[in-house]
Length: 232
Length: 48
Image (cartoon, rainbow over all chains, first blue to last red; front, side, top):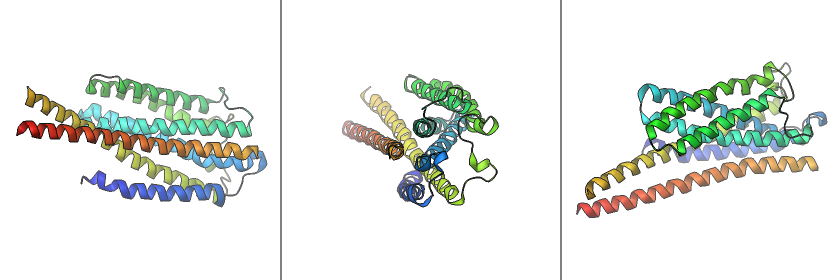
């Protein structure tokens, strides 16, 4: 059994265990925030921040893998790029879904277009949705991989803005308390750290599974060619 | 109480989303593996 396949079950078990611990810590271990900060609704933060973190990591992996493909023309890099982009879109979707739910509960509105962080995160999501649409509709795999590399480079430009906007230009989105003086209460910080670790392990598991699909598709294409040679 | 509804909705969306994506990957992989198996059998039969 290839090494990646052998790792899947232990990774899934680790992701499941860490996820359960993260849910416990987020909902029961960490204290409620002050009413002014949303009270119990603030517990959405643990999922929202962890989802956003994984989306940034995933898009960064897509960018690095895309550049590696352009340098080497090895389609294995493209498999990593495409897989990571798909997972990144999933987690970015979760981040921009949970954020407005939290915002509605605390600000009274779902979205504020004037906030740079929110707008750049939406742009980032749209760029990678376009990336996936491009890849799904490319008749030629190599051409799709090259064009996709351009898209992922554009998308990568949005990541630093999306990440740092509320650190550099504090507008409506809550500040990144982990970087602020005083920071998060220790138990909240611990719950957040566990959530981030759990989601990261989940990302690694999903990557292995998704790359496995790309490998299986390549094997299927090879077999189809072989079957065509036999009948020809 | 209204706040807790927001909390439950957010947690449901996240875990349902992750679960559905895992199911999508599993089904997709199973479909491809089935095609591979069928094609391999066809090639073996033709080879004989």
